[in-house]
Each structure stands twice: as structure tokens, then as C-alpha cells.
Image (spheres, rainbow, N blue to C red):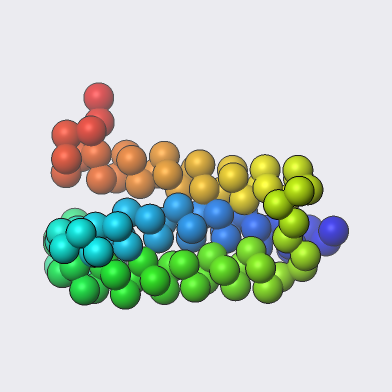
Length: 105
């Protein structure tokens, strides 16, 4: 497997992790931070904007994971790289959103 496949899988995992809070908040009807709010990443965007942003992130994750190389869930290395991307994005999001919701220690 080529190096850029792993690069793609890492970012695919990151986009997949980023899709979850936006999409879930949006379908629950809750406003949530997004890059389109004022100020970006701090203000709240509508539920509709978050559903659209979460869907876009899912689309990018699909493209990076499924359309680049041959991602196989039964192969350990690509799954670990995608999981690492997802884990690092999740930790970054926990830190970033924790300051708004009291989740940072």
C-alpha cells in the first residue's frame, strides 16, 4: 500500500469523527458550533446547518476511506491509521467543545 493511502485513511477517520457531533446535534434539533457560525467555531449554527455540515464530513470521509486505495476492515494497518485519525480528532473536539460545555478539567 502506498503512503498516500495511509494519509487518506488518517484524514478519513478524522472527518468521520468530526461528522458525528454535527450530524447528531443537527438531527436532534440542537444548535451547535460550526465553522459557519459567528465567530467561527464558537458561535452556534442552526440544526439544519449542522446536518448539512455533518453530511459533508461523512461524504469526505467516504471518499477518503472508500475511494482511495482499497480500504479493508479486515486489514489491521489501514483500520489502525483511520482509528488514529478518528481518535486524535475526537480528543481535539473534546478539548475544543469542552470549554463551552464544562467538559475540560
